[in-house]
Length: 92
Image (cartoon, rainbow, N blue to C red; front, side, top):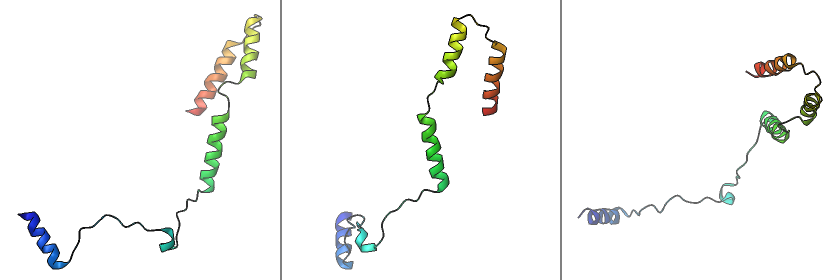
């Protein structure tokens, strides 16, 4: 049987099966794991947090438009649309 042959060969050569990877402690190597984030990465994380914390709707602008609409004050829809389109064109 092949298993018996393997056992016989391992006894002849004095080999043992590997019990897996050896765990290395920090004290054995004198090193520890570290992560260093570049200044660009730190700036990017700060900008991402600022965007996430910013409100999705600017209430001051929306409330002014609502007041104009409710009071039947002339709202220049063409101007509003052109500003909105210019804003989204700059993003693309």
